[in-house]
Length: 232
Image (cartoon, rainbow, N blue to C red):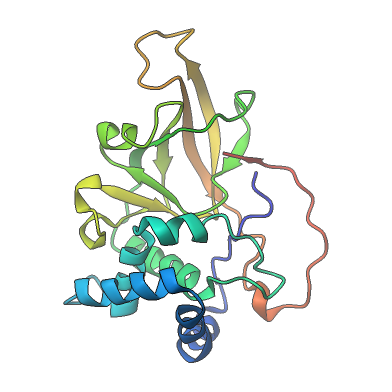
């Protein structure tokens, strides 16, 4: 279940990390990435007012995440513990933004995610994570635009509705953090059900959180973690 995911939820070190982002990482990472720099500047121009206890930087981070150039670079990056991670600031700001929004968004959401990738279908009743921040939509038709090979019907309890802060509000996005885990309660294919909305549909129900890298920057190098989860 994506044991190598950058899944820090900053439980117990939020203030320390916020200070590092403010004094070190944000400036450094914007300077070192042209795509990040361009997207951040666009976000600064886009964000006019603060909302829902989010700072301007939180709102810019949500906007930046919806920029396709940054998204493609950000989500695959896994070098968090090696101190070569290029996205400490964006990861922290997105994580904290989701957590702040969940203080008022108390409910769980039923969302949809469409992809063009194929995944292992032998995962019924197993626990999975997405392995990165995962965009999903409250509207199935919106999700289907992103692919109809492997799709997900998700019941998320840590994901936050970020649609009104997004670059693309019409997508009705609920952003799921990498530390949320799910139980696979159903796996359906078009061979079994011809009118299915995708070739394969995985039904996922939130089963809690798992943060292997919680506050990892402030700890000694951790021991090797056993790989016991499936990535989707």
